[in-house]
Image: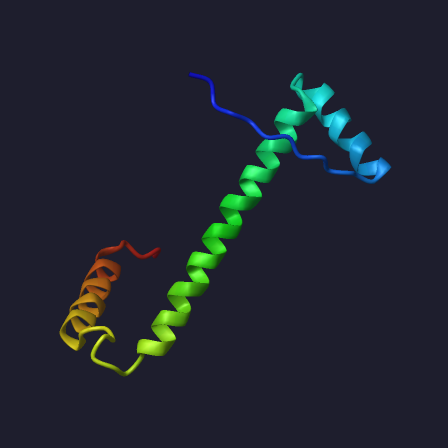
Length: 92
């Protein structure tokens, strides 16, 4: 079953409109497809930025509390990183 679609009217400055249609012609794709892809990428990027901000806010709020990183786990992670880095061949 085909997905329902909604239309969105987006007035574009003349130069941006021309660039979009030029890119579409170059790619051999419809301008609406390129615009849809650009919007999807922006939304995905925006969601990732919001998620990063939420994680950072949570981490800052929980710093120093019981929900903070377990000291034993942190120590094990540091030891692991030291071991991994120590095994790498160094240039002579």
